[in-house]
Amino acid sequence: MLTNVASVLAGLIGVGIIFMGARAFWAPQAAVGFGIPGTRTEDPDFRAWLSVKAVRDMASGVFVLILLAGATPQLLGWFMLAATCVPVGDALIVLRGNGPKAAVYGIHGATAVVMLVISVLLLVG
Image (tube, rainbow, N blue to C red; front, side, top):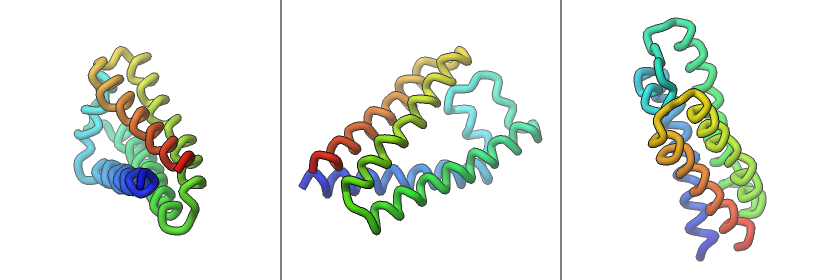
């Protein structure tokens, strides 16, 4: 039962990451809400960086869906555990850049905690 719940949540994380990556192409101004102060979304250099990040986000979401479809819950759990480093790193980047604490803890920190819980549920289930 818990493995099924964790699998559904992992799938939602995967779809969410794909959506966030794709959104960077049609709404780059949304990147401002992730906590980096002074983000100039009209800057071509920033848009190029954001496009690279977007492709990587979408690929990460596809990895989750591939593992969800074809691997064991334990392998998905290990992947999700490793991928938890991404929102932790994002939180540290925003914190170091004097970004809003709401983004540090409310977006990135909360995502890391949810991913950690999903990982544990998949690994012990």
